[in-house]
Length: 336
Image 1 (cartoon, rainbow, N blue to C red):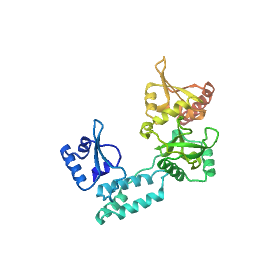
Image 2 (spheres, rainbow, N blue to C red):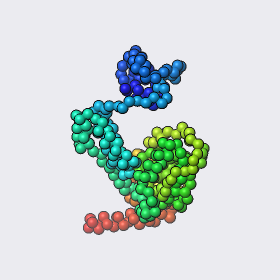
Image 3 (tube, one colour):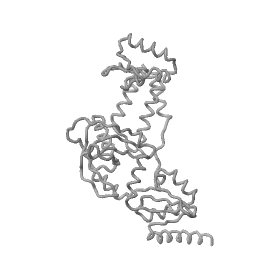
Image 4 (cartoon, one colour):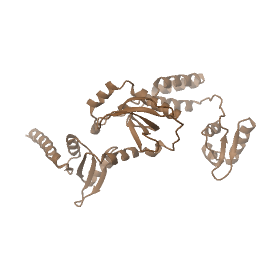
């Protein structure tokens, strides 16, 4: 059954890969393939250096039974999904869990139900250093007729059916965008937010849309099937943010001088780690990042403490100095 499940992926799987996966000899794998063929399973071999075993396209597996650990691993995925701020297909996930439990033997079902009570996942905590513009976020939620879960679900349906969608978008950092048709490429989750990945036109530049800022989404016009070699793993580990930061640096920015230790600390941050760092002649490090709010830059300098200095924009330096003097006066009054 394990071999059948792996071969269902569509690609050729070599005997060596199968032997490593199941920790048996290659000879055992060949015997297992022979048994499957004898049972009428349409397994055939691709020859050559990149060859391996395949299942004939369209072969349908019989219902699969789960062991306790396999069932618990699937249930863990559902529990984790429910702890996200937005869960795609919530009703369908509930039905899937019911079907899973109903298909299990009584003793396995009891073990899985117990597991759901003693396994938990904490929600992603708030990010106080990168707070958002709440007034526009609230305005978007009033205007949007669909829930965020429905938006993510509609985008996933388009991905699965390889079709386009018409999407209208509004961000607090730019002018609202009129509805336009896009080619969905993928979807990813980061820091409790869903991001939709697509292209505005075939062969155009890839772009991300944050799901909670989508005003509306609907099926696009009928088009030929879309073929794409996009792989979401290529933009994970915050590669997507690095690409976005490069484009943001063409807009308003702030430049802060840091000690080497402060720079190393910020390089580990999910957001500031994608800023632009350069060594200065005096031994400090300058960080340039996207910023259009002087109060946010002042807060960062206060948080970093001695050694941090706002270099640019020069007109913000007075506000930073004023906030530091205010802190100093409070602390000096406390000592007296």
